[in-house]
Length: 84
Image 1: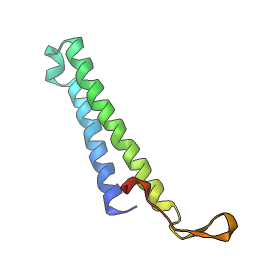
Image 2 (image 1 turned 30 degrees about the horizontal axis):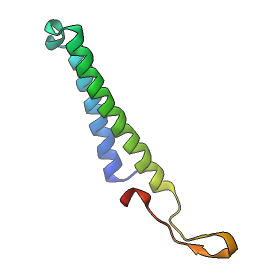
Image 3 (image 1 turned 135 degrees about the vertical axis):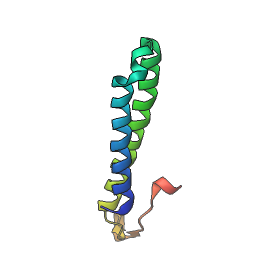
């Protein structure tokens, strides 16, 4: 794992701990159900997006970036679609 993915994992864990603190902390005592639901929904969506980014980042690291033979034995160069 590279520095970037390790940093992402630490940040994701910290964000998850913040969610737990949100629902168990003093703010939860005064928040309405609607306020808590909206806040949690936004933050869980954001967390899920960042988890998906981590998944794609680690998947891209494990893939071969060597030229691949295509139909008719032509060489197809690796193309990173995420940077287009």
